[in-house]
Length: 112
Image (cartoon, rainbow, N blue to C red; front, side, top):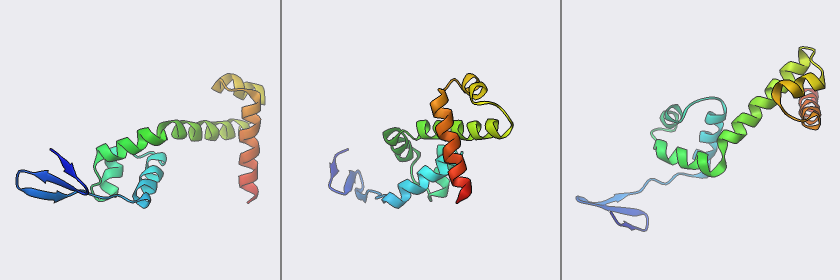
């Protein structure tokens, strides 16, 4: 199959390729970070191919972002439950400066 510009040649003629905007990409990212899998995201974006969403995910490293958000949430939970900085470091295997930074950000968000 040979691609020509924005059209794809098929046996029956030309088929217009789908164009996805940055808005589609941002919505997909938001849904993924909320915890939906790629198939669910595809359905919410009116049938955007799962492979396209997967390419976006790999290019922008959404999985790493998702893991970071989860760690930040866990740090906040543990701190609010009364754990010390060192206990949080030991449990999550991250440095004390990182724990301090995540807690500081959480407090700033609460103030706003």
